Amino acid sequence: MARTLITQAEFDAQFNLAEGFGNSHPIRFNSKIFDFYVEISPGHRELIFYDCLFTEKVLFTWGPELVQVLEDNVEPANIFGNNITNIFKETVFFNSCIFEDFIQFDNLIFNGKFRMHNCVLQNVSFRNTTFNDLADFWATTFTEKTIFYKTDFNKTSVFSMATFNDNVLFTYALFGSKAIFARTKFKKGIDISQTIISGSLQLFDLHFNFKKYDAIYVGTDDKTYQNFIDRDAIIPLENKVHTFQVLKKAFEDIGNYSDSILMLREEKRALKKLVYHKLEDKNPDSNKGDKWILILNRISNHYQSDFRNGIWFTLGVTVVFGLLTLVFTRAYLDNICFSDCEFNPNRLLNGIKFFINFLNPARKLDYLDNLKPTFGGISYIFDFLGRIAVGYGFYQTVQAFRKYK
Image 1 (spheres, one colour):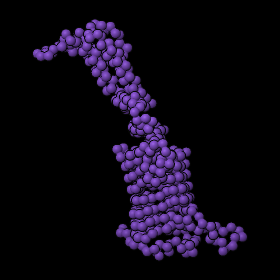
Image 2 (cartoon, rainbow, N blue to C red):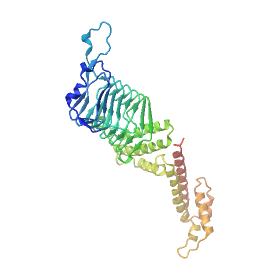
Image 3 (cartoon, rainbow, N blue to C red):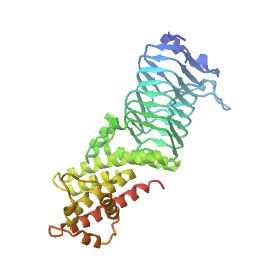
Image 4 (cartoon, rainbow, N blue to C red):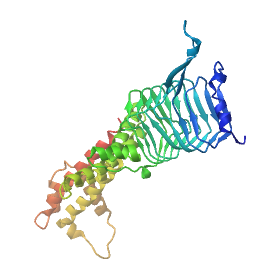
C-alpha cells in the first residue's frame, strides 16, 4: 500500500482528549508520511503506527495525567488530572516504520507493551528509559550508534533478528528478566560490560563482524573513559574484554560450548592488546619478557582457546630441537650424504623412531650416548631444551582442551 501524506492537524485530532476519552479503540496510523516534527505524549489508548515514514524528529514527551476511573466523591472537574506524567500506560506499537531523523525516548516509563517490529532507525536516544512490560525490537535495524543509557528492561526484552550497523552500548542498563538475542547481527561492537543482569541472557546464533569490532585503549583517566562512552559511543578495550567474558558465560549457561569458545577467543585477543597497552603505560622499555610470554601463549594454544595450536606447536618444537640435537652427533655426521644418495629404509625407520622418542619428555638419556655427541656435547643442551619445549606443548594442549568441560 502506497504511503500518503498526513497533516499535523489530522495527526493532532487523533489525540484530542475530549474526543478520545472513553474511546477504547487504538489510535492507528496506516501507511502515512509524517513530514513534520512529531510529539507524542501519554494517552489512554493503544498507539499503533504501521508502514509509516517519519522524515522529521519524533519525540515521546511528558503529558497531562489522565484519570479514567472516578472514585466516590470526586468532582467531575477533576476528571483530567492537573499533574504532568511521563508514564505510557497503553501499548505502543511500530510496525515496518522508517525514521529518517531523530527519535527520543528519554526519561519515560512504558507500563504497557512496547513493540518496534521491522523498523529502521537512524538516530535514537534511550536515556533513563524504563520498560515495565515487554520491550520488543524484533527485526529492527539501528543504523547509527545506539546507547541504552540507564535503560531498565524490567520484563522480557527481545532483540531477535535485530541489526546494529554501528556500536551498541547497554551502559548501566538493567536486564531484570529474560533478554533474548536470537540471530542478532552486530556489524561493529557491543558493550554489555556495565550492564546489570539480574535476569538471564538468552543467546542464539549471534552474528559478529569481529574484524570491525573496534575498541580503544583509553588509559587510566576516569573522565576520559566516561566521555568516550557517553559522548562518542566508543567501546573501551577493557569493556570489550568484559563483554566477551559475559557472553562466554551466557553461552556456557545454556550449554552452547562451541559459541563460548569463540567468545573466549575474542576475549583473549582483546586481553592481549589491553595488557600490551598497560605494560607500555608502566614503562615502554620494560616488561618485554611479559610480552614474549603472551606471544608464546598465542602460538602454543591461542590463549587456551585452540588445542590445534598446541598440537602443531608440540610437533614443531619436536622437529626443531630434535634436528638440532641430532646434527651435533657423530652418528648423523657419518651418515650424511651430499650427492648420489640412495634411499635407505633402515635409516628412515631409525629417524622416525628418534623423533617419536623425542616426543617423550621423560626419555632416558642413554639414547644420546649411543649417537656419540660432538662439539663438546652441545647435543645435550638441545636435548634438555627440547624436553622443556615438548613438555610445555603438551601442557598447553591439555589447557586448551579444558574448555570442553
